[in-house]
Length: 226
Image (cartoon, rainbow, N blue to C red; front, side):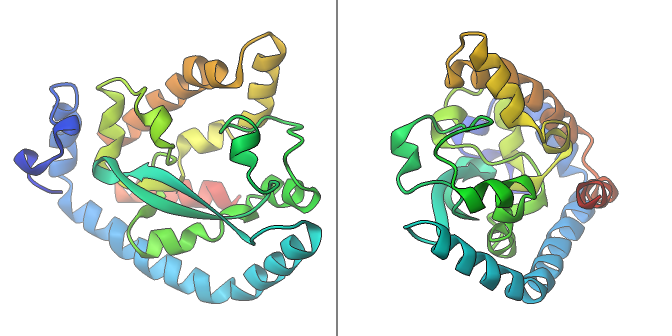
């Protein structure tokens, strides 16, 4: 953890201070978290390289466009970074609709639907974890547009790196279906996400920050696998 006075001004808020103090006393657990991220991501990159090759070929054969999808997201200390995923949507999908997808989104490719269902599209994020831009466990990285809508307290989630999985991710693993239901009720995709999905997920993410422990991270990883 960097010193309080060295935090970006956007994070030096009274609403964030309790979360900062809670994390500051868990230096050893934070060290273990980073060591686990480096070792586990490095091993998985090697072991899953054949899987990544097969997925790359399937994506390339299924539709036109690059194998990887790159997007700018926000991580620790409110910094932007480039996240990597296997492309599961048509080229320029971000320009053809909302940044949030819903169940049955016609921008999703045939192979993309299968890859998304098993979360295999997120394998390239292992490189983000290895580089320290992400962690295995943490708040899912949002685009800047949604981070700008955070309350001061929500910004506390940026005291730790963004994550591949979390308790919120597990409970909202069918988020696409919930979004589809809300949009059927007449809401726009953005309104449904910002007013209904995001606040509930953030309650869980803030709870994680306040009660952070390395052992809980390991437990979340195991639950994610199963």
